[in-house]
Image 1 (spheres, one colour):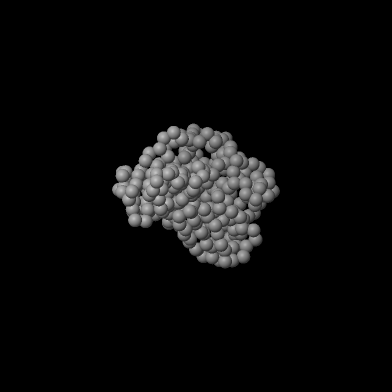
Image 2 (image 1 turned 90 degrees about the vertical axis):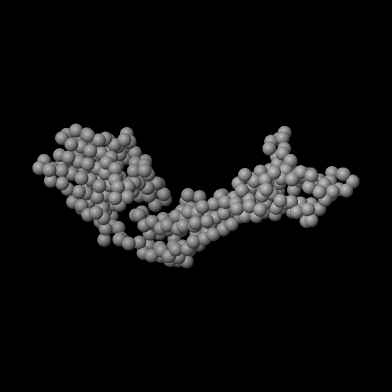
Length: 328
């Protein structure tokens, strides 16, 4: 630790830390505040503590020359400099160290999603500082891929078996294992011959509260063909019980317009146009329509906007066609 590049030591938040100092007659420990200023936190000489740390968590054992932090905190992270002297007062060394206090790995969670057409996504999350992710699989799959800093694992849609996420940092580690079953509800795609720019038609197939599921590519335009009724109200569902009205059309006038300018409504064709789809557009929507006599009809749809992964880049031409999703 004699290099001014310093030794780097890691400690865990809330846990004790022991710093073994050289066995010399005199010790001076400083916190380096800047290139020109240091704050002395310990002075030990002739077996007596002349200057002790102001923080009661810092304790010095004179017998074994050990500095003890009884409960490490983030504020202890800093660069330190230690001066040592022998019995004659000769400087025997200057030592540098960098202390980094990190929160430990905790609350490791693994979530599986079967929402994509071609693949399933397994996401791992954890509390802790400077965490790193790695995975192991018990089943067989062709070319699993990692994304989001190894936090998300992309697998074939038909993969089954155990998946384990390992999380670590410099002071701790943890893991969580889940068993992946077959994705429910196999999805069939039926592409029409009509070439259009991301046209989605909301019709009788979408009356089930299970909703129609539509996929679109990130950054591409999307046209949502609504029923030609007198009164239209589109809601985005936040949870099972709450929703926000994002658009309302009544008596040939737009009463509530979508706040995002990317969303445009064509009065003539009853088409909602998203000029450039973004991830935030993904979600479950409910469309309420009323005819001229006031009869109400409800439609449900699930919109999923996906980035240009390897699978979806290869099928970008197909995604620009009209298609129908059928759950079987």
